[in-house]
Picture 1 (cartoon, rainbow, N blue to C red):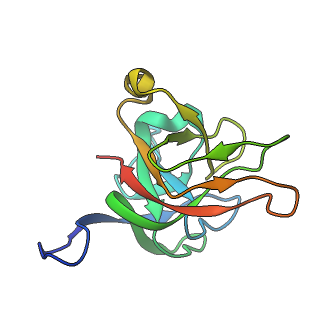
Picture 2 (tube, rainbow, N blue to C red; picture 1 turned 90 degrees about the vertical axis):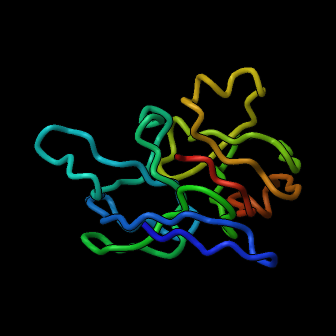
Length: 151
């Protein structure tokens, strides 16, 4: 675990060391990662690209690309410069302060806004959007910064 020293100019951040055991591919910068918790593979470091069904295992947002079977860091608490948003059908807008949750269908992506009173349904593991972005056909898979709350 890498805990940033307190200072006045940088946001506090906690990063956790993980290993990508997702046989489907790399966990790329900004993707959500979840710990593997199966009896045979649960070791506290193995992670895969997260989906909504893995909410309680949400480890954080990848700080950099993590190749298959490689080690890397995920932001478990604090500022993440890049958060991967899911591709949507139609249009939507995410604004600063919106609470994002793990996507049900696209592994590693975060999606739609949830109401503050529904945060407990995410087991208090979510990302707060920083900035505003609208999904369009020309910008189908945007990234934005966020505050990660995975601890």
